[in-house]
Image: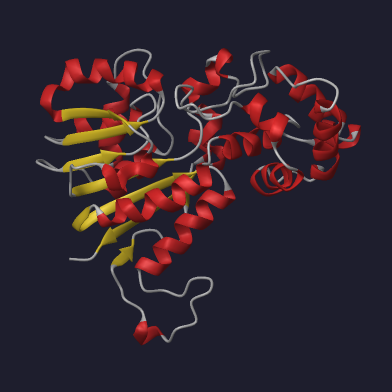
Length: 318
């Protein structure tokens, strides 16, 4: 299956990006003729294309980003009835009527398309409005609006817990002080504020831009991403057919921890807070990955975004 995945990617249309961990994802998802699959995070359609090209499969793809809906039109024209797209947050999987599915895939976080589109405000590399919303049409506050009103505990959760930022106290204090004078309108303004809170020694020693983690934490808070995962993963598991496979790609320790604990629970293994004897646990699935699968050095060299990616997979019991 790994060889097939490489072949499918190499023969994809020009301009199609390689989705992260595409070899391993195809190996664990194992698409087969007549199979019905759910891609909960369509993005640019990289994983969906691999599933559709691997066999006589059907795919239902979800994404809350309006731009993803536009990209999906190409798939509708190419694959016809084998492909369907719905503009939906994966937190609302329990509301879809389709299924059950032979396989379900999640690829958490922000897509390369969203990062590369400067006016979406996800990246600090270009000066742009401070937006960061996965779905700008949702009516939820932008990052600028969220930063203007967030309480101190909410800022701490975003910068310290979601962003895993060591200098979180300085950054939180700086945001509160700055917004009292003038709103943070742009990614440049926020990036410069964060940089001012990082000691020079740490700035030069870091392998990543010093604003990376804080931006990530704010984005997670703005889009309620942790809550969406906590709701969407259990709903997806219930939509799997017997022997169906669930694959989860995460880029953040909190995302991976949620998947790890749920997978252990479904596999009848001890999870945090579960002190029941083993014979009282229900085994509803088997783990296909004991530890998360990570990208090879070769893939990381070709796609730096894959560096922090972790893949977990399981098979639902019969």
